[in-house]
Image (tube, rainbow over the protein chains, first blue to last red):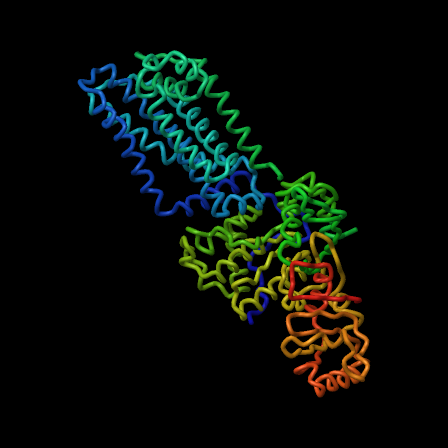
Length: 265
Length: 329
């Protein structure tokens, strides 16, 4: 039997108002938790995402015979959006669904954790995973098709942040609103929609008119166009309309997520 | 009104099922209160409402002066819960898991490290602190995982500690250490709500007991009060031969049966609770039954809390066909 141990560091007394963790301390603790859970898989996920970035540029190139420079430019500058959207809309709901199935989600909800931080941690981890892939995708595009980009940094960074937050928030909202199995199924459907039925790597003019109209209100084309304009500002244009569409989807995603996280059944 | 937890008239239904039916209970600082009940008695529903994961239909929950129903985020700082399900530790070392829990409860990095060391010493799990829990139950055994989950709840000081079956999977030696750790937290001023269906273990540690059955509080009080009229009550267990009728029903011998407070039938055993003054008569009656071969054998022992618990929870039951009970305690 061990004796009652003396505490080396003074802890707050139990009957007192318990201390409140700072936002930063909670964020750091949750981030540590998430990273440890992903563990040794993390480098592998980053490498796979980077390969996907390169793969989209090269692979879609095979689909188009005798690819000309403007098509190559369109394809290469669409790659970042493709990666960010698939991560946010597909990998995030799958990861959050797994957290719901293995009990992590409910366990975290029982702790004194500001709910918005759960979303913020997910956003941070997946942004870190996405960034190398985005950079490599763009780089491979430049080398493969000998392209010259004209980067507009404020537009590129702003668009990158908006697209990432929007996609992660919507992905999280899907995961917390639907049953885990249903969420995973839905995210599978979204992969196809984003990769094949969205004007990211091809111009919207190739779609039927009604589909073009639909995409004007969805965040996919808006995000892709905004990123494209940031990468090749001398060729492509995008502006407030796209930013506003993205912002509305962002707010909706965050609102649905926070509502689901704070909801008491 | 210095209670750490005051629950009044708490009611919560799921569809037609009333999981918590007008529950009231209180936990003063320094006390361990046991919440006993069968599976589905409504224990977990009650705990989920304390930390704002479920909203009550009616009733109030006060943590000190705080209205926990109106301020769930503040409630979660005051209440630390060890859930019945295993904590999701995969990928984490026990040390990382406990430190993270401490940091989320507002301890500084050095306080979190110190609190982790202290609780690991208390539970004798220092040797496992740096071992990593792996998926599919690898790395750390179920017992160490359970103790780690306890440590995650109990390392940082909180006014109220809620433990849901904390000793499941834990070995006998560490079980004892865990109970000491629980007692110590109460002695330091915390209130402890111990949720369990392990009556025998609860008896040794709790100051107060609340027995929940089908969502209702059916009894509450100290273990002595719950156990029966007095601490000196006896339990007479009669073992019936195969297919034999209950001798307490049909007056099969000439000796008068002793007056008893409760009767529980479990399979081929009939358990009677009686006052100690009737011991001699009980033995005489049981001997007469045995010599007439109405019973195969009997035993007389001090009554246990479990007997009283079964008498309370089986009284209006049809789900447990093995128990047939009359209680008058």
